[in-house]
Length: 136
Image (cartoon, rainbow, N blue to C red; front, top):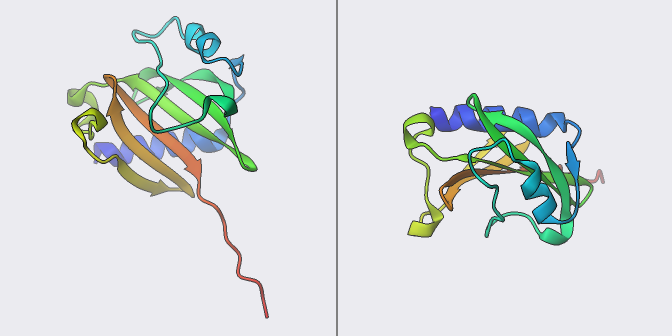
């Protein structure tokens, strides 16, 4: 149930595409912007390419201040959300350093993966491509 609440909140945030607070293709610049967090955002081994980094902004997940990092994708942008992982608050989320497979959820046309990496809860959000069948 907590996983679904996280997925719904992240989908809503992803779809709003609020303006970036820091714009840079340099991860160090983006990382240093988030000085108000109790953690340093990290490059994920699973999500986003540094070549496509756009920037970031503060957001929240379940009332905890988080980092939203945005990457350019084909015709859209993908977002990676990071927050200090507390299993008491967020529930049990797979830890990829333990070989666990991330959780996958689809909400409001957004595909999300959730995992723990480097002590952070990470949620990657991507628009689900809309395919149209040509009429014959």
